[in-house]
Every structure is written in structure tokens, then in C-alpha cells.
Image (cartoon, rainbow, N blue to C red; front, side):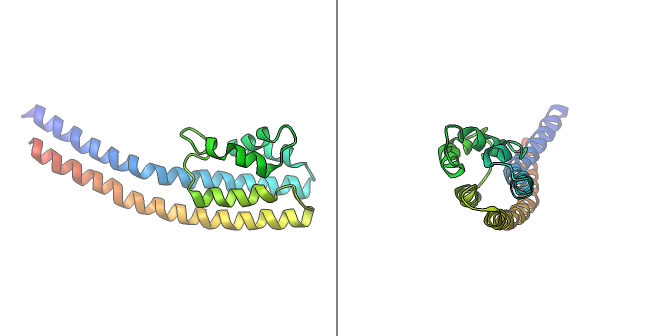
Length: 168
């Protein structure tokens, strides 16, 4: 009987952990967007306030995704061309844009396509517009993460409990 109870407890725990795992992707997307927002803020200060060139500002933005774009800019490529070159690779498993959705990547495409292509005022407007878009996406991602936590964790627990009843 003790073995069955221990097994039932393990099944409940596994069900709960599976539910938590399912909701983890939405939390990671929200965290990735938060990091990108902070990097865009730093980029805005460096480019419009300190007049740093695009590649150097991207490298110092403290974001793995922006550092990858800066690295891909070597050889005289623009930020938009560099982003197009690394976009698919960055979105793969383990890449800096792994958890981003297509809408997130489109916002980044708009940002990188215009980056370094105009004067200071236009760059400030571009970065401000990108920040607004990213903050809206982040708010939606946080709401989705909250929904996923409220749905998947209890659902995993309930499924674990149902399986535990079968074991007992």
C-alpha cells in the first residue's frame, strides 16, 4: 500500500510539473521581450544621446540578440541585412530569439531595417516607436503568461490526481 501511495504522489507531482513546464514558454517570451525593451532603451541613449555608431551601440546594448546582429554587421552590412541573415538562426532552439513569436520578430525587423539609415531625430522616433510596440507585445505576453499559469498548472495537478486515483 505504501508503494502505491508513493507512486500516486509521484504521479501528482509529475502532473503538476508538466503543467508548469507548459506554461514556462510564455514566461520566457515575456522575459525575452523585457530584455529586448531594456536593450532598445540603452540603444536609444547610446545612438541619440552619445552619438555612437550602430554596430558599437548594438554590441554595448547588453542583449545577446543585439550582439548577434552587431557581429553579423561585419563586412559593411546594415543592421537590417544582418538581422535578415541571422533571423532564422536566432529563432532556433537555444537561439537568442527562441521564444519570440512572429509578431515580435516583425517588430524587430522594422527596427533593424531603419536603424542607422537616417539622422538623429528620425532614429529617436524609430526607437521610440519600436519601444511602444515592444511594450505592447510585452504586456500581452505577460497577460498570456498569467493565463497559462492559471490554466496549465492546475490542469496538470488535476490530471496527476486523476492518474493517482487510478494507481490507488
